Image (cartoon, rainbow, N blue to C red; front, side):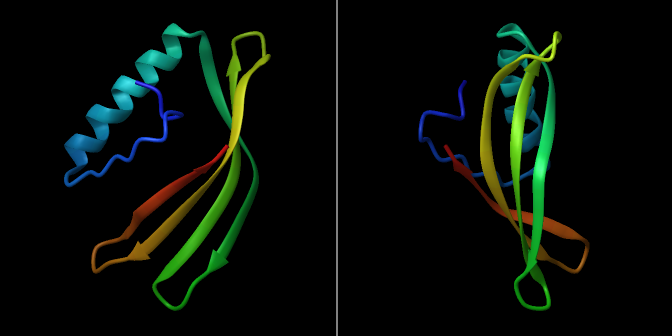
Amino acid sequence: MAVWDGSVHSFVSRSEIELFFASVLGTYSQEGMAKFVANHVALEQMGNASCRIDCTWTMQRIDGSVMRDWRQTYVFQFTAEDWKIVTSIFHL
């Protein structure tokens, strides 16, 4: 399952999120991924209870070579319990 295909994923529960990312990480590992590195992380407040975080992700093999990289934006909303990701946007 590739997240590069333009598809949209919506999750209702934490277990759905865990299942999705377990599948994605399994696929990446089969492709040779050893780790992710986040660079150029920027935070922007959007009112009292929301913010946006932008970063550049780099997926690396065990030898440190780059498999792929991309920019991603996360929009967070503060709820009564904690901060929650409302949406995530890939910038290819």
